[in-house]
Length: 360
Image 1 (cartoon, one colour):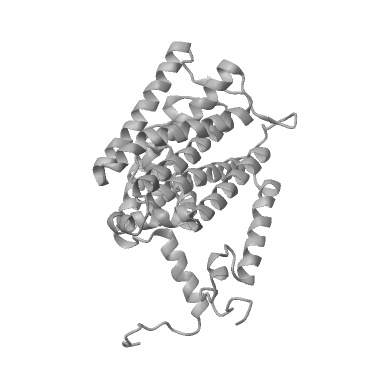
Image 2: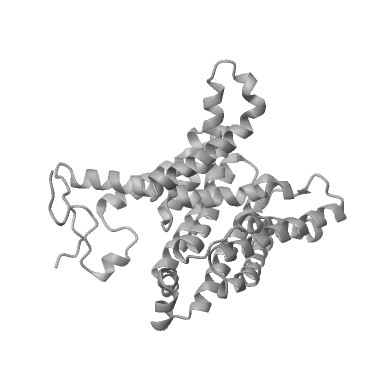
């Protein structure tokens, strides 16, 4: 048996080692290296606006990966994603304001806060499913936002909690380039963490529970522990993303964590492709850039100044239409489109015919 995987397409695996490898073929190694060089080179050529946009995308990827693990792989529906982001952000803000805590204390504290909330709001998942579970997680959003608003009003922070930039090795992280590199590192760590979780016993247990809880239990999987673990791990990841958001923006306010934010993250994993890490990444890119694309298109219309007041409503409407179109015509999301394109180029110039035969 050859030590190297087949080079025809890269999808035919002949050993467990190949099946567990994150990068399998030489072409994938070259593509990964080229992507790494391109991502690291973005700060050298991008304008401040584009750099900030890329930073927003990278931050959204962290949160989208967490929700993809919880909903796409573990099968636990959650509408409280914005509440977890708010919990991490307010943890960072409160620790900084009250104790002047540095980021290497506040970010782990945000992760612990998220894990604790994952336990509290993951317990209903042991008895609830579907819509009932989604409604129970929705309570997380309202509870966290209410407590955050109470803290702001009691302490007199009417415009939000101001946070100084974090410092690393005595250097403050303030420039757009520095924040881009920080968020790039966070996104890469989140992606590697998610990929390795899915390759572990925990990830396999999540998939089994998602497929059929009864069968998973019969196979010896602790269904309750798997569900609760999914909430704890993903809530911790999301809270860290919220903490990074607080540091990047320099302030925390309840207005930044509306219910619409939860809907946006759900849209990321639906539009990108449910049950796929690549789909979560593609969905985060699409949903983050979509409002800017709509604004650019409206700006190209004759007399665009007249539509400035209704731009927010146009964004809402267009966002809803895009979600409906994906659900109807492309349920596999952007990752489904990517896989079809990939298969076309891998099989070209040969045509792929049905297994049972059929006409050309």
